[in-house]
Amino acid sequence: MVEAIAGETDIGIGLWISIATLIVESIIVILLYRTVRDYAEVAKLSRVEVKQRFRPWIGPSTGIEFMHSKEGKEQYAIAIKNFGEIAATNVVAMSTEGNEMPSSRDLLISSSESPHTGSKIDKSTLGPLLPNMEKRYWLFLDSALMQEVREGNGQLFTTYTSRTSSRVERLDMA
Image (cartoon, rainbow, N blue to C red):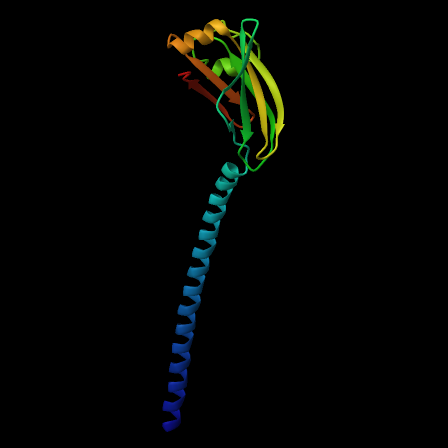
């Protein structure tokens, strides 16, 4: 009888060990599942970060600087810089004369004449811009228009574009 009780105790201990092993293995499986799910979320966020961080960011690095006047035109220079970590392959600078801000649609039209405002959009391909590289773009503006802007009777807008970004700004000539 003593032997029978000892045998039942061995079965009871073995059963408890099996149950404890099952619980521990279940906890490990749950933790592994959560880890894999968290890694998938981190990979998704990394993809978004790479799209935003590793791209060209084109913009002016200086204000518009007056160069000189000649034959009724005033020459200005603006420095355009790639602030991103990747080279911009095709930077195009555009300028137009007028008292209205050009629409994004007008800027994207490939012809040089804007159908909405009737003003000519001058495009100049600056070519590629490496990271932290700067190129200068020259603007030739009518002296009479610039006098109106200086007197506060007109406005001046600039734009710059590349394959990755486009922006239109109003400049105050105070």
